[in-house]
Image (cartoon, rainbow, N blue to C red; front, side, top):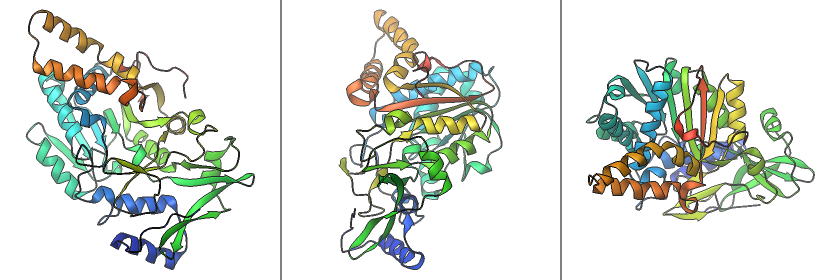
Length: 383
């Protein structure tokens, strides 16, 4: 039941230890929030390189520009479905270094001049260092603005874009033991931190776990923050879409009997580990999204579920028109290295053995009749 850190503790570990000694054991969600988002020592607030070959993990954006180009095509379709409003707001949260925003804006600039002219791109980013990095990359391309929190936005007509945000939200750890659910708390140990099984569950955790039938021992996660996030987004969407891209499962798969240790994983230098209490602030800590819980929270907040599919099927529908265009250009001997790059990136994105089945796409909407082509082959009723 324990996972101890090294004897030589970081400054963040010392701060966490001081808090626990003063206040008592804490939820893992609180511990994870400090490890990832502490304003000075948190993993996502540091200057370290996280994405790509020299970082800790790969993402869709790491593959190349094709991902941003395909999303840009979906934004064009969303704009048209909404009746081509001016302005058209694109709000991204979790933009990291701004590369996805750059790829989207560059694709819009070259392929949809009309939308590029009336689109307003806004990034929700509370970390000043990240805003500076994003600004340096994006200001040469287009006019982009920033807010610290979702609460600062006025209700928009447009799209909220969330790319690998939910998996980085702090989760509660729970364990089914002795015919009942327990929350796993974090307490101080002689050489680091360890888990403590608590018999107390708050009402939100009890409600989230209602109806989930497993046999002991069974450990998993509950992401209450994801439901809170989708409620906050819904309050800021007057008309339009919410596009969520992340790795995860519908509830029936998430809490399947064979997934007895949950999905919580740590990453460092492209190596996986399963000791989240070790080296806080130095490792990425992530958990898959429960898309059913997100969809249920969205419906309660007045949004509709417009589509849900895996990345393979999304790419088949979303890139169909672009691939036909490339075929015509190549047939006319107008092929280029750019075309070859797109096709190579596209194959990586959609391949079931690479990223195609790992990532899921959830589309939410308000006051919208229609959906973009990426959801042409959506898994109806999967949630």
